[in-house]
Length: 198
Image (cartoon, rainbow, N blue to C red; front, side):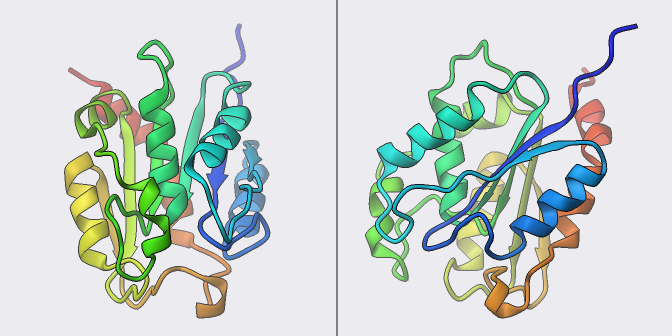
């Protein structure tokens, strides 16, 4: 009997962050307890990010992985992972992605990141090719307007999880854990089975 490959997760942090920030270490630990493998790459120059360098880092992290890989992004990590997925051949299949405080347009709060959002995303492909899609956002995010995250969720037809008073889900706001995200991942197989039915 062939053993099912272990679930694999890649967490892509955002602007000015690092792999030890926010809720990333907690989530990695919780997923590893359940037998998954988790990678949290250090994105290059997080205070002066460049799209090409970030995409290259995601590619170097994800491309050696096979099969059961779910990408999780926070803030700038969201549009980065979406752009990475757009660059993948149609033959490359992964279950999907989770976006935490995602955005797909230039933000007045973060104009320095406009190069990540200049090109329009291929929403059709990002919907049709990846059956597991979840967006998590709060109602009082002062960095990424909740409407921007909500609009992106609608464009991608993701499951929407709105967390009251969640801010931008930063450790300085008290978010060293994100149970709603863990619960969404725990329901992942059920969601995949439902979405894959004709």
